[in-house]
Image 1 (tube, rainbow over the protein chains, first blue to last red):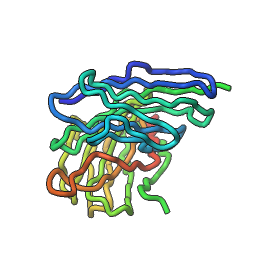
Image 2 (cartoon, rainbow over the protein chains, first blue to last red):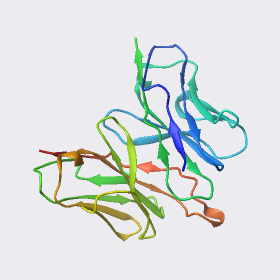
Image 3 (cartoon, each protein chain N blue to C red):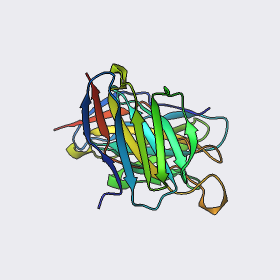
Length: 114
Length: 119
């Protein structure tokens, strides 16, 4: 069965600083990878996804992530964060050709301070 | 024009009661889900339906019973509510199945959640 580990439960940063949110996954087969964002009192929204092809994927709001198969990682990055990026970020994985199940990590709370 | 809508948004009830949460999607998707998010923000899948057929049924107490009258609706009924059922319940939908040219890549569209508080 697949699993996702988000190493940092909380990441505080200052506005305009770069940020990296770490995600590692475990699976015996090929996977699709996702990052979702949850703003306070809202549902989750897709930031970006890796299905195949280029290992660097760009998403909404200036975020990007890089798939590293050898390290089984899919870290999320943004070169310069805004106050409005304060939210909970979830990494998720689904096996290719497997069930419909999307497995989420425990989330990383990003807090951007002025 | 909400894509995935859930009602009610807030639900406060006593232990032992029975309650339902409704979900509707207007995206034309084939697959719908219920996820539970606990107080620590951990998201866990409960159920998934594809074209009204149950395809994922995680280890969830029998008190929870999903029902999909058509592929645009997925409701969740909970009997004999317990304190531990307090959580935010998210409905989601996605396109496609597990084979063919329309394989479900797993991109989910979420509703805004239904916050259940059991007293």
